[in-house]
Amino acid sequence: MTTRQRAVRKIDEAEEARDALGAALRRAGIQLPALDVRPVSRTDGAGYALVTLGDCSAPVARALAAVIENGAVR
Image (cartoon, rainbow, N blue to C red; front, top):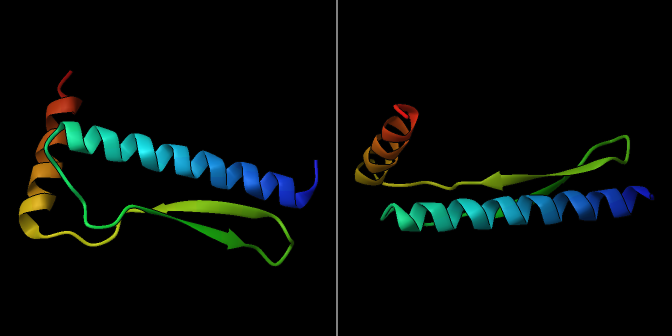
């Protein structure tokens, strides 16, 4: 597998994770203003991708914290 193919696979994986997180947040009644994927290239040629959550207001941050806390109790 080439470096480019690995990078594309990692971007696809990050996009799937972003979509799953966005869907879970919507089910919890939370909407982040930005969920995106940012591909990153390293100097050694290996690529990876980050799911960026973006900024959110204090009420959204509190709601997100509450959902995480409630889930952590399980």
